[in-house]
Image 1: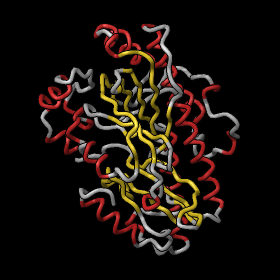
Image 2 (image 1 turned 90 degrees about the vertical axis):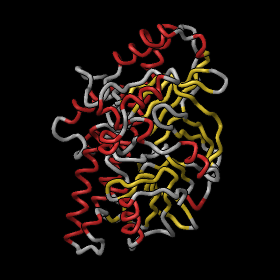
Image 3 (image 1 turned 180 degrees about the vertical axis):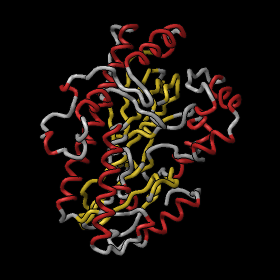
Length: 380
């Protein structure tokens, strides 16, 4: 464990996980760990011979994309920021439950995939849905944020996933796993919500194929959004250049080798942090984010936190946080924010853990490369 603060739900879930008969070596909980569904957010779960849909989560492929520009933030006037860039982004990218009104080009979709091998994801008019959701942010904790680094350069960061695809993958295959486990009298208690698919089964192979499509779709989705954001920024700064983007997943499973044996590593709200690998760890709205370099710590299965992590549930945040105080914290930093009503407090700064404490707790997992301060944020 890389955290000393964990809620009671997460403790119960860790207790359930520790009893699984197919754990490989041990389970790791990252510095942002907190209770989730079946498996805590911030959990790295290595197993032998199975995959657990709930250990990936409802948004397979959720991740981050960040890119640095050569634009100095000091050169962006308030009018340009608010009326040109932020307004332009909102026009280009639907957020929350909204999608595009017309189909986006199939060229934006992952290529070299046999669409007929995606029966679960693409049933019920699925092609139309994914074409209209391509290039959209989604809701919850997803965001688009403009940031500046310590040298004053503008960065763009996106947090988004596979939209409806990930939800459908989780719903369908978690139920398939439950049905299989009942049929074969699984020793895993059903109330733990840790149903699994054996690696030798046809159901596993179907899940694995469709999971990897979700991962690629989510990456394509972030790419399209970033491309359109860059186009908006270039309307005000036509000569701007942008570095190669960084893009990582933090909800997925992969086959890896650890402690001398091959296993299936589930990362649910946990980022890969192999030695030398560049990663992204965002803070909450109103706090700094970090570009990091992995240190390849084997005890964490070469992983790190995926963000600050929630300090309170969404319902608790809405019920207890003071809206005026949360807005003042953002406006005192001159951050263009997205808090407009009480429900927006679900994603307020105080709903999350202190990112500086999180980073301190995992200093043996990642090395900080760049610190980024928020300028403006759009929430899902």
